[in-house]
Length: 150
Image 1 (spheres, helix red, strand yellow):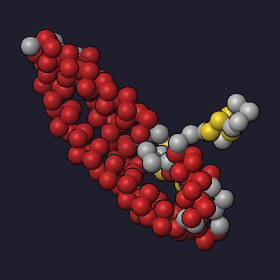
Image 2 (spheres, one colour; image 1 turned 90 degrees about the vertical axis):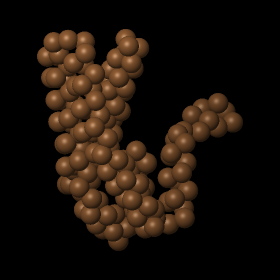
Image 3 (cartoon, helix red, strand yellow; image 1 turned 120 degrees about the horizontal axis):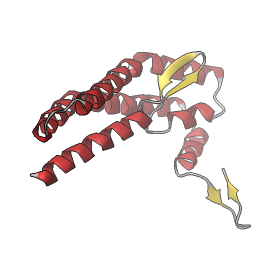
């Protein structure tokens, strides 16, 4: 019984921490959008033409990541409050279960929107930009001199 409670609390904390990284906001062209798990920040670092920038901004405008991110943030805040006010060990199970039931659809919606955004963004990029994006995804590489290059 204690193992299940520990597992539930651990899972909730993992979701809270992962969500904090997933809903971090970034700025692009004066607009704020949630940073994607699939390298949206890296896309913005590519040398985009004006046309590409416009098309990508249009893609960002199609998806309301900010609203979903706000709902996830509020759910995490509510969880912290509820856990701090738990009166019995058994009430923790109910609190965590209610939290997971609330955030699971939001997380699914967020991940689906991000994946669709990246699919649409990749269609706008040139093959060279896609290649650079793929290189950024795997992090810096080490050259023959042993130095790290971006």
